[in-house]
Image 1 (spheres, rainbow, N blue to C red):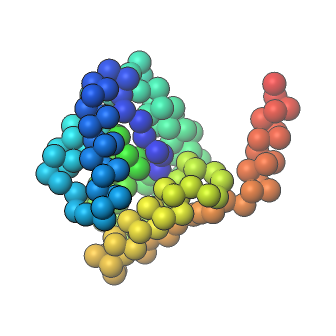
Image 2: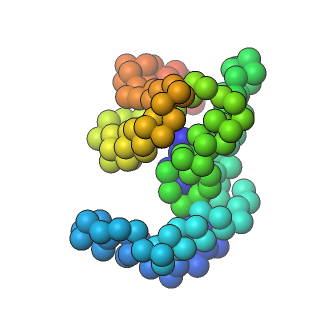
Length: 158
């Protein structure tokens, strides 16, 4: 699961309007408006290429490397915002495909972020409530000593 970014050729005014509506709603504690929903969908579904969304290309490349070591275990990529599929969409598709145990791994490595600490757990709790027969795990937080070892090893290669 990655954060996601708007495609570089997605109109900036669309993204600004979406973020403005989102911020206003969060401050007021209100409901998502139809306009915010429409803008979110348009941004998420903007056509992606390696040129206009290198983040998505990079995350999907990482998933391909991970997939190669999973011995056929299903793996889906999802995005927190700005890109499709959303975490909800990816998990619903896996459930539709007959998968009964799902582990979510975020690309966020360190504690302290609202996505990994609040938003993702809230989404997973709603999905668990809607699918009590499905086991949904969250492989986070990461062991920071293991992350540090990975980064240290990588530094040794440069």
